[in-house]
Amino acid sequence: MGERSRNASQDSGGSTGHLLSLLPHPTPGHLHCSGGRSVMWSLTALLLLVPSGGQAATLEKPVLSLHPPWTTIFKGERVTLRCDGYHPPLLELRPISTLWYLGHLLLPSHKKSIEVQTPGVYRCQTRGAPVSDPIHLSVSNDWLILQVPYAAVFEGEPLVVRCRGWYDKVVYKLHYYHDGKAVRYFHSSANYTVPQARASDSGRYQCSGTMRIPVESAPMFSAKVAVTVQELFPAPVLRVTGRAEARGGVAVRCDTRLHPQKRDTPLQFAFYKYSRPVRRFDWGAEYTVPEPEVEELESYWCEAATATRSVRKRSPWLQLPGRGSAPDSASTTAPVPQAAALAPGNQPLSFRKPPVSRSAAPVTSVPNITSPGLRFPAGRAPTAGPPACAPPTPWEPSAAAALKPDVDLLLREMQLLKGLLSRVVLELKEPQAFPEHGDTPGPPTSHLAVSPATQATAVVES
Image 1 (spheres, helix red, strand yellow):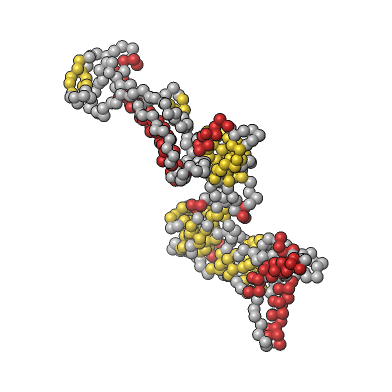
Image 2 (image 1 turned 90 degrees about the vertical axis):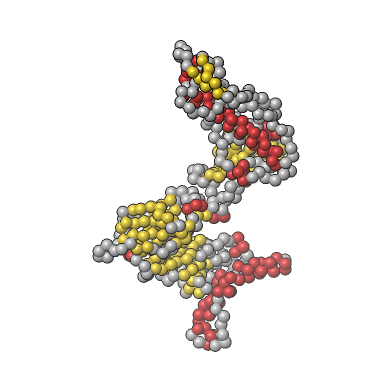
């Protein structure tokens, strides 16, 4: 029992440690002069904020908001700050529940909302809770200011910046700049909006324009303002969680972590084998790989996305423990392969790892000759087929050998596509070189035949 009391007292002291550092230190004469009243107010506020019965241990920091929601205002304007958090009922013996700070100065107000016009860093604190996150308020005396939201902007959310003239004068020939580069032009006052912000939208923003005071002025520029787009969640990682005993196979999980301020955002997950989706977007973060496909676990990857798909990120290929170092960044960050190209016979190109015993028919190479009137003799037309290549070498226990089947497959398909394109080009340029496509053969013409063995050129009559 005594140990529990000591722990509770330590928790109470920890929650007020920051407040103690903010209070002024009284001198012996303060308590006997007008300044003593201020010190007594500070001490009284400290006692009122100390939690009772360990209740503060479960309270979160209050949320400080700004209305209107712009961090830069003109000199003489006023804005409203609001502190939302735990507030005790009015019937309690300690009704003072909110403290306000401007920098390290304790403000003489305990209301839930206050109006301010002084620049600086504002914070608030409710009884028994930590101090809120700060809001930086700037006051400008310029003709033109750029206003940005006080709240953090996350990926997928709209980013709005506002170029405002002195006391809402209309701004003409308005330009917005991002990191020194012009991104948008308006004839007159308008906000610049990024519908779905990305990390690349972070940077320093600025605006320029003219105003009629009373005649049109020269172009004026606002001060630069830094904007940071927060990451909603990092790229997911696909991990093996264990065997699925009930249904058989291996269970995998698509892991990621939401930002603490957005932990209530729902996410959906999809799973893929190469470029083929094996489970489309759903709320579950786990998937069971069937037993027949367990040997191809390294061909799986996953995606995490918001419900509206405003933010969508993919994982690297699944990495099994004990398989050596991870593949290079090109293999883990490459976009999802698209199976849009067609192989001969209108069959989609396969992204499966090729079997070791795969064989291919030879292909006849065509010399790169562009002389006019070049004709191939009848019966010597080039044929295109799968390129001949040696079967892949046996798997070696290293990261490079693990990637070799994929590289071999890519080279084969590139050579196959090259052969098909060569045949199409030849058919278009020399339609008479392929008699099977014509009804009647053309008149005899002279052709140049190149012998691969002797590299000599001769005239042949067909």
